[in-house]
Length: 221
Image 1 (cartoon, rainbow, N blue to C red):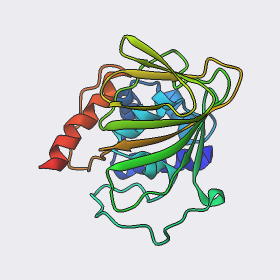
Image 2: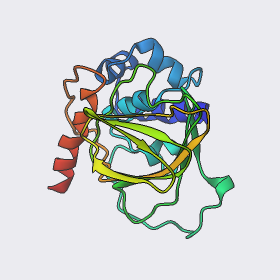
Image 3: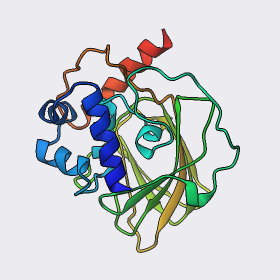
Image 4: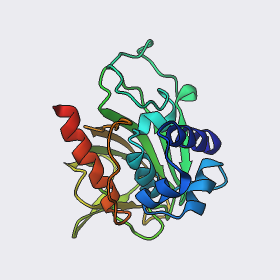
């Protein structure tokens, strides 16, 4: 899936007429890292993936392959089949022992849904970078324990615990145990941008995700 992920990112970048260097600068990562992600040579961390897809105006479903990356808004549509077999669910294996498996969604292009698995010691970034992105983040822990750092607060989530917060608040996940942690995540209010949108000045890997808030405001109009 790493190669397919890279191909979708590269296709979206070239469709928007963006150079590798310009896209890397906007995502606050090195051109070398972006190139390695696009060619499938490395697996991005959760925070790196969010930085790349947000500056390209993609959603998690786009990169998971539920629908192709496009440069124009897509009308909401229901899935042709109500059931998505486990074997057919697109999956991304990311750096640092995190896996996302896409869950069935339909009729709402502003929703992302994943089954997230954190191996022992896994984290959403390799340097404790806190993520920020548009939407409301909902999560439910299925097994294991997962630590959430939300701004200046720390929470240990156990099976049966759930969470809900504005995803523009800086947050970071890591598995502090020697057991696998797994949970279901829904992001409500995810958006993508079109080619008509002007470039945005991004200063660092955390602030890059603020662009999605501005895009959400446009789509609401």
